[in-house]
Length: 223
Image 1 (cartoon, rainbow, N blue to C red):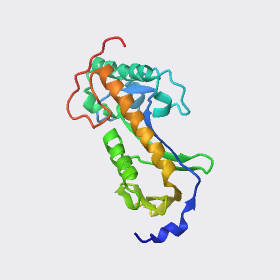
Image 2 (spheres, one colour):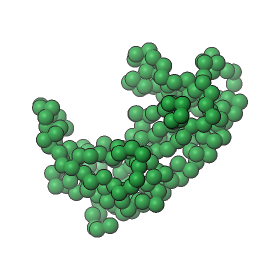
Image 3 (cartoon, rainbow, N blue to C red):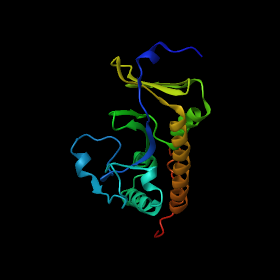
């Protein structure tokens, strides 16, 4: 594989942290899919009790933070299911409460790569599996509204270029040692699957791996 022209612009970092995150919401919105008054977003809500898990960010819990505390996470999601039933909202219409997020970051160098269009484990894992299996050449290139990411493996490094194609701006052009990222990705994939397996058994349905198409048959016995 030949070098891409933008490789020469890449800032080489010593490492990147990798993790998958469960999104945590402070409130559950039980209003209709379409609203006429913006105040409905505040009025038609109930408070949610966050999971009793120590996390760096109140709105996100990583797999490394959740591992070993799966019951607390299951109790949080159980609230959402109960509230959806209480207000007659099908899970298919409030599935955003179960979305995941993938992040790559280096806090010291104020660098992060986000994947805002990947909400389910299957979408996230498709990218991570390709990253692990591709040791040379194009790993990944995806483009959506307001987001584009190119990833290459070349000479022991992973190159990332993140852009906003609509605005024509580039957010990051970096290179990091591949082996360390791949090792982390393998651990993250294992943890994510283990946690989701626990949640699925505890609640009776898997609403994290794929987007929900039909109403799940949950079980809501005390955990």
